[in-house]
Image (cartoon, rainbow, N blue to C red; front, side, top):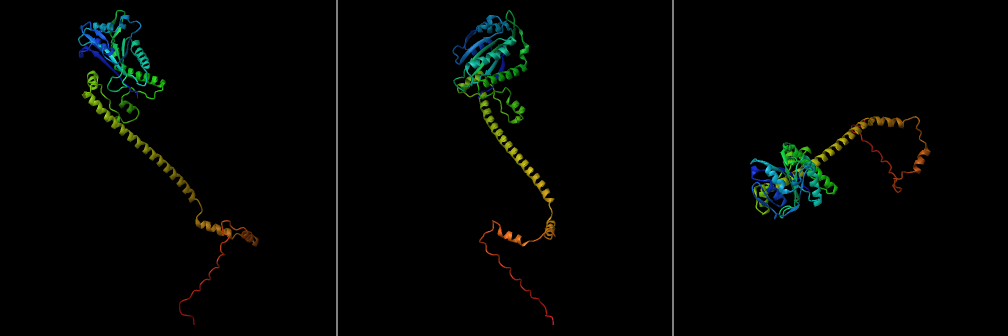
Amino acid sequence: MAIFHLAAKVIGRSSGRSATAAAAYRSGTRLADARTGEIHDFTRKIGIRETFILTPEYAPSWMLDRSNLWNGVEAREKRKDAQLCREIEVALPHELSHEQHRMLLIGFATDEFVDQGMVADIAMHAPGNRGDRRNEHAHILLTLRHINDEGFGNKAREWNDKELVEQWRERWALRVNKVLEISTASSRIDHRSYARQSMEEGGDVALADLPTVHLGPRASTLERRGVRTTPGDLNRETKIVNLWLEGVRRMLRIMTERSMTLLSVGADIEQLRKRFLSHFRSIQQLPTTHELMEMHEALVNAPWRIDRPDDQEQISEHPDPLDSHDAPAPASPRPRPRMRRRGPRPG
């Protein structure tokens, strides 16, 4: 099942980091930092599927070289707490091929970053030896300054808008889902948080899945070595809680379906009740027993009724088919007993 992940963060000197070290680690290459003289060698790093750099059409050609690009960024920044670059980390659907991943990244990075004036250094990573083997992902390092004929110009403050991150998340999800649909994969991703999905779908936000926390490079390394960390323990507990929440939501769905069934049965009963009342009202309009007896007596004593002997013969010749032919003859009526009168006899 494809999962959604797009995280954006800024790499700066205030945390003791450098653009050259970040680029060397993500690309699995060896880069020398001209400003500090440090050598960042990650050529022994495994799991690097492919790396490439995308630049705007008007960018100088030297920016296509990774060492020149990030040493140029370091040289342009003078502050000891300078922001150097932005990293976008995305999860790649394991249902898609490497070539599909590559085209996804090129299309997304070109439309959202390069066409806006950024340089994008992209590294595609394979899953680690330990952990989830479906963890295909990519790192995109982005420059933070406008580009002119000489190189880097002023800082592009408009790229720091938080709404841009939400826009990137939404557009990445739309792009991935489109490719998944074309490839006939059944899974889809959603850029919204669990709470937001539950709220917009009319569910209970309190029962939405809890988000996990980002492990970071240090915790990830320790977890891969089998060493438990605080963020790792928190994520494991979160997964257990989410399983429990899923069970609660499933029970609520079943209860809701049953209540809807009861409501449907109640509606049927109400309909039957209305039909019975309607039928009962029509019954109330029928003649009473006394009226029926009067009507019968009137018919029997009608002056136009004539009992003819041939009618009786015709009836006896055609008995009721339901009567048995061997039925015994009807018994003669019993004589009426005489009544004894009590009291003295008359003299």
